[in-house]
Length: 287
Ligand code: FW2
Image (tube, rainbow, N blue to C red; front, side, top):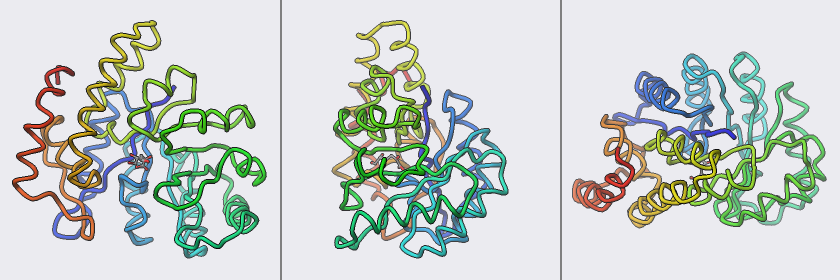
């Protein structure tokens, strides 16, 4: 069961700090993260240029043994170019894509064509990144099976049964849940793993949670999950995509850069509030 980190993209003065990005990946992979998900939601993928995404991939592939590269775009040529670019790096085990978003009137057939075009563009496995709350459409297990060429899915969904259905209909597919509040559930029902943004700030806690599940210590596993839930509850009202950067600093002890507007960084008062709000969870996790 994999712990996959959708890695933050650290900016300084509007530019990506690639050294910091690589250093952060080194830190979290040393603490139990098995693979990194580049340019996902936490990585602000849809708000990055093609050149920025390529630069991230290059940096990630130079330090991580296993990389999944998120290539989704409303410009098909860009997504195809990223899929082809990914072939240069041995560390890339798959490319993943959100379905085309914003246009609610695309048909299921048209969504399927998009994924088939990606599959035709690369020899790497293509994964679906299903995130209905962000994308406005759900490519569920039946629709994913219809597409025919998908080799994996990351389902960001609070409903574990929705995620399990992919495994039921496509047993050979890699199936990951992308919800931080379902890490315990995902490990317990035997998914292939999780893609959890909390792997950016508490990678060692996720590794302990996985160990606890493996040895049947449900109580311990649950207490770690609940501490993560407390952190999420504190951070979400501030704008979670921005709060993640602060959480890295609070839990891992280094400056993780900042997001780029329109994902605005937290104000100093919000940062101070967040630090106080997660102090108990930090003590519970003994970090
Ligand atoms: C990503 C993830 C995790 C997210 C989730 C959204 O790409 O960032 O789906 O943390 O809040 O897989």
